[in-house]
Length: 235
Image 1 (tube, helix red, strand yellow):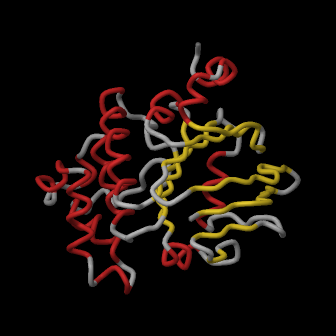
Image 2: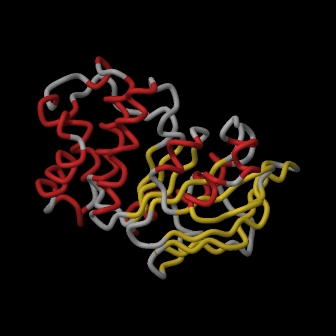
């Protein structure tokens, strides 16, 4: 599905990512854990075409090279980003925000089917279609943001800090929904600071420190790791 290797990103003289490599299989949920400033958002932006990787980087999605494509062509190739902060059109309705996700020629014809998949994951949205997005709670807005990305019919869904700013209850509700997305065959790759809950619903995880991958493994193993517990789980 996704294969990343030799991914480095610099901002001027500052090296934000150095030779990052990871993979995501079809239907997998993979989490990248790291503290503030570790390079998590830069990593996500590099995959989505929002920052330029250094020469030599390889980003393959289903065998197609993404590292030199503009952002809109990366979406067309099957990678959809849910950015940190959601970035909804707050004055538009839920229905209008969701419909904007089906803007690609290949997604317009199947917009109705995609919408039903969104409702299967987030049933609450079916009753909120006429609501103005800006009047919703943070958790509900995050559902709309993920739903909008699902409307692009992605192979891979990228989530940048999906639990940021959400209450514990809404965070739990959100993470319970992610395995339902993966069950449809759409892979999920997220960067998170909520280590315990993200590992609890993930298949595998990677540890990112100072722009480098310093560890990886099955999510269940990382949850039991003493080093991970001290660094990320507050134990």
